[in-house]
Length: 170
Length: 170
Length: 113
Length: 113
Ligand SMILES: Nc1ncnc2c1ncn2[C@@H]1O[C@H](COP(=O)(O)OP(=O)(O)O)[C@@H](O)[C@H]1O
Ligand SMILES: Nc1ncnc2c1ncn2[C@@H]1O[C@H](COP(=O)(O)OP(=O)(O)O)[C@@H](O)[C@H]1O
Image 1 (tube, rainbow over the protein chains, first blue to last red):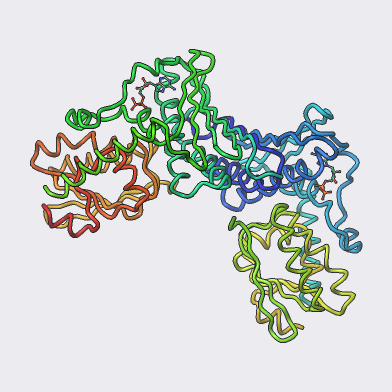
Image 2: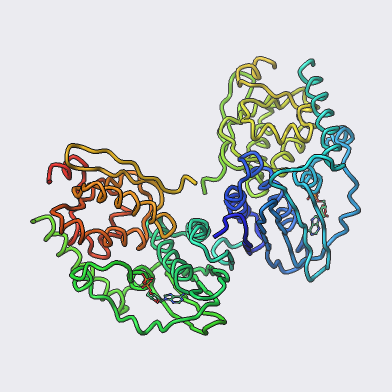
């Protein structure tokens, strides 16, 4: 029995009351797969964001169907696919957020997809309105340096530190 | 949003390491459905027994497939169906246990199906070897008196109390 | 369900909200409600103590964004304190410390008003 | 994983096993192993303290059945103590109190040897 491989599937009604259960489900698998608590939390948030989007957007004006969460564990990575059968959307219509502009506007919301990108190593959307809309998120157990993403994240973190210093010196 | 209705579906590899996750899953739904902790525990044990049987017996001599757990919540009851795609078995070949004889033999095992019957209000097996073997278990939120089962349970409880007295007076 | 809770303590002109448990899209409305109540009473000086908060998603972050303009327009502020590392990391990742002052300690936050 | 644990204390001729967490088909082998170890050392007077056990399924009950004959053939016994109501209920439901003595308190169980 290899604890590091396997497919886990959870399907719940599309209701925010099930977000906790989904986080527990994903968290338990991620922990067993060997992620530290810090990364378990990151994976849980990313999955929560994807499921929150299903609850809030997928079935607008439709009879709500379910949230489908598939977790695949391999020796080197964990893949979570969150799917709905809702109206779909164009994931490319959301350009990467500029957090400075975001804060200047003082608007709320619109952070979910951005956060998913920040928290996971690979993110992919597959949209088939009314049939199956999925976001597939990958987290590697032993992340390899090199990717553009890492570079981006570093820049963002630097920005965030700058802001913090700013806040403290206020 | 009606917290008392809904279909929840969990699918995991057939391995004992997933029993805890399955218990958490079922427990959370039962709790939300309104069962007290005592009954949540009973439902968890019954489901655990059914899933343990899948892990230990269903795929003997086969490539293991998965454990499938479907939970349906209605306003008056919770239904859990545990299914496998294994070799199947004849649920009628296990007559109700006589616990006195059981203890006289000092053998282990063989308690699972008996326990499921003791803990749940309705139990039904559906066997299709290699395709889908299920045990469907129902627990009512507000149990109605009257059924034969209740009567049986009372007799059994009396027996158990007798034994306890016996033990204490030893 | 005991998944989220909020308690309030008024210290002179400042109100402290103690949030505990899981702050997500399901529980955010309860937190929103508690802040709305403060604003209804004209209390715009708010400290949120995160000591017992174990989880936050963007729906939780959104609550802070949703009120900050109204609060600052009324010469108030929301200051945050006592975050666990886990919760701070997500605030930090999104740069929230540029918009909200975050303190180690509730008392510090209160005194900053 | 911290889902099950067993610790041991020897009090003169009696060995006490403290079990904690979840005792199911996954963790039963660990508990079995601890009892097997006692028998290997010729220690047949065993008290199992259930204080921190939060869950038991029939796989856990099976461990007790699996050793009782060997233990009693060697003039020993397994006595049980400090069960929570939740765990006791399942022992009771199956009539285990007719085969095993169950005590409120570890000390009582030890003194019964
Ligand atoms: N599963 C989905 N189904 C339909 N629309 C979605 C889905 N996920 C995201 N969206 C769309 O993408 C937008 C951006 O999502 P997100 O970044 O999470 O921010 P928010 O949910 O706060 O608007 C949503 O407003 C919605 O229009
Ligand atoms: N899902 C299943 N697939 C195949 N056989 C099963 C399954 N569930 C139960 N059985 C059979 O029923 C028997 C009795 O099960 P049970 O009462 O749980 O006791 P135990 O598992 O300890 O033998 C098992 O030994 C097995 O032969």
